[in-house]
Image (cartoon, rainbow, N blue to C red; front, top):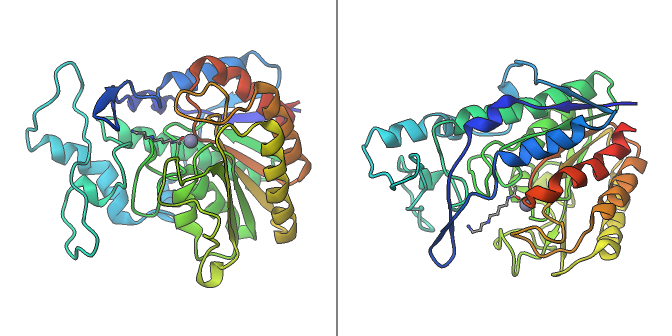
Length: 343
Ligand code: Q9C
Ligand code: ZN
């Protein structure tokens, strides 16, 4: 058996050199291009990864998930900002961070990035749009493979997507690759999304909150103390038609493999009841013990156990790369997980 690995060279074009941290610190951008390189190198040394480029497919699936004015902004916002001749920080390429956000109850929408992002963790640089499109294309190609009867496919997406909602970016995310794949698959019937990134998939939840065809499940660090803080609580269960079709499983600090697998069993139980025809896994390795921005305690071997249980759901599966910032461990963690779908 082998596993298609969809990878686009456009990841290099998105290369912010810094991020803003509470306390006023400027740090290196954790969501770095190296992440892709280390995962790719590890996969290439296995016998089962079939690395290929995404199709130059139409990008309509992006517009099936995101509002057009948002897509236009991600495409043009950087250039329009640069045209205002802003001051550029010394030693850094031009990097557009939102600084003003619409206050609650404001009626007017301006032309500032603050309209389209919920935090300061998704800057726009020169190549962001092209990279975000390339990343989405990986997910689109993986979903198309599944629609053409492939059993599993891995989209090595960068930038990631699960914090991006219909009309907002945030948390290193611009286009919601996971949601784009799920939306495509939902044309054929019910689809489940299982988000195992360390952070709550608030963008994915936003996109499908009123949808009963796409079940969204996220297992993540409790937002009462972890990003994205304002969403991801257990009482968010969906609304309207989607009532009962969103499941959040927040977990405590230092969650280990044993506790994680118990949460995963709950998620899998819910997926079985839902009876989807396909599954999309939003895969993050920031649950790793030693991730620089996270507080869980999973070990490399735990990713094999997690993958084994997900594999045993026995559904056609698109796996979409989300977070994971321990560069040195990313390659072996990816292999530990993906080999269950490749070997
Ligand atoms: N600047 C994903 O794992 N952290 N995104 C903000 C203060 C944002 C993580 C910290 C973390 C986003 C895809
Ligand atoms: Zn994450």
